[in-house]
Image 1: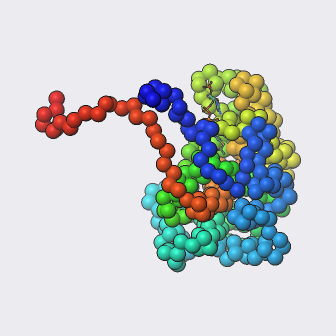
Image 2: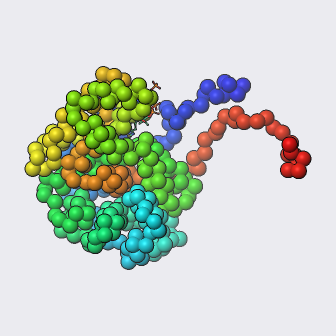
Image 3: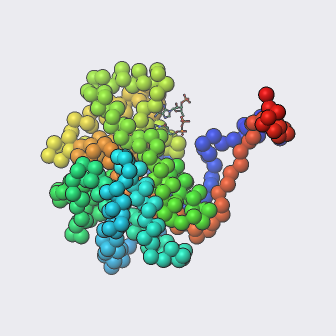
Length: 380
Ligand code: ACO
């Protein structure tokens, strides 16, 4: 095969390449459907809780009441970060961004692992639950320290999402705020072989430990074409300012060859069901909870992006005004996404360990032809 023929076979961005068999989630990009272990993700978001979805993704089945109570207790028992981790967050050099602090903190958790040589499935499951439970505490603690405020201990009487809000803002959220945050977290919990999950699997496939795989995933999610698109989408809405400016703004961006953040998707061809549900959530915001002004703006952007370039919104687009309306600072949008996706990462890392082979694709070489080494002194 000539180099040119081989190059034609390259799947740029691995598009269309099937790289794993999974039991965790399924995306039907044509129908715009996402399911977790067979259950429609939007149905789960409407009816269940983040903890219940965590159990499902980690154990393949929804828990019964006894199993759910035990699982919630396990998460509660693991929420508190160690004194060493608190010290690390206090002493991080410079002023790292929240995602950078989260990445460093999760990486450091390996140092306090009580049985590092135990690589059994049950030990990795325990580690996964410890990391998932502590990520919101890490994010909230770092955020408060950064604002010059005292960190707040987790409140065991609150659910995972409500406790996150409490640790960030120092007030128990209203039920509806906790519910909307919980819904957003469920919708972002898992999404097949997206970039960060795939990166986590590549790391796990070398049999590096779960902390290394999580660290890889957090670093990958931070990119603007992946998990940071939500903050970028909000910046765009703020920059546009009002619905009457949308049409010219989108036209200008597209003509300049720029991307509309929160739009487009590798897999969904007819729309992202998570975006649709978050649009519905945004529509229920009435000023008492959230800010209703963002719905009309966001819908106008959706309309124009579709008219002008046939683009559909992805989860990041409607997540942005939803979280903004709920009072989350933009810098925390991606860390909140990471806390949600931690479950999907964990499920995939465990699945990779269960049936492992190193992930090692090929590349077509297009560099210089084979040649001889010339000593430095003889080079021109
Ligand atoms: N704005 C403008 N044009 C776009 C966008 C966009 N948001 N997304 C895709 N396109 C266009 C590309 O310019 C390209 O057009 P062309 O054929 O005329 O050159 C075509 O659509 C295909 O784009 P690709 O980059 O090849 O699509 P790919 O599947 O590789 O990328 C991605 C998917 C990264 C999500 C892309 O749509 C994008 O950059 N979106 C903006 C960032 C974003 O929202 N990321 C979040 C993704 S979801 C998530 O991570 C949770």
